[in-house]
Amino acid sequence: MKRGVLFFVFLSRSLLLLASNEVAPEGNKLIGFFLALLIVIVLLFSIKKRGGKTKKGRLFQQGNKIKIELEKDRLYYPDSLKLKVTNRGKSDIDLDKPLLVFDNFWLKRKFKIKGIGKYSFYPLYLEKGATHTLEIDITRFYLHDKKLKKYPKIKVKLFDINGKHLGSKSVYIRKTLIRF
View 1: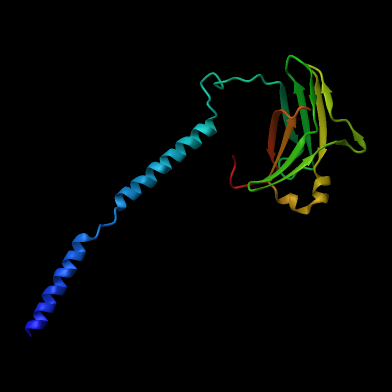
View 2: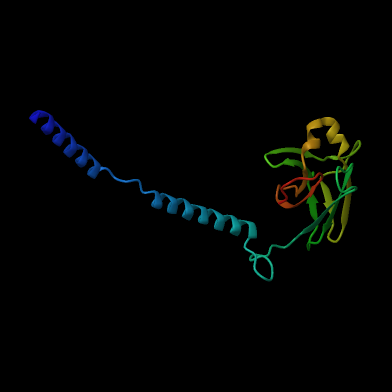
């Protein structure tokens, strides 16, 4: 019996020593770390979304060389888009082929528009103050790929012949839960 008591005392002391050497989980510090990380991400996203704007406009105002308008013939599921480009710059520019982007938030399909029908008129020389209008038939793209009907957003990007991005415009062609 003496051995049993000694074994019990030895076992209880060793458990007591093990319990005192264990470090408790520091959950409060972990929660604080994730909260601080979340705040930093939200701040970076809000600064990026705002684009560095001040009350009078952008912080570093770039000269808008062209004005892009993109109109659809119907509110939802349009058959055609009307692209209108106006040169508002001080000099003439050479427009390269417009890039038509079908956007499905994660997937993008890109097409270069060469012209209308058999006529290819890009690159286009656009004088200052001049306007160029292009009718884009979307149904031809839907005939090429039926999955494009599920893409809710269409974006048109314009570049000059040197590859410099001049601007872009986008429209929603079907209803979505998320609008950016």
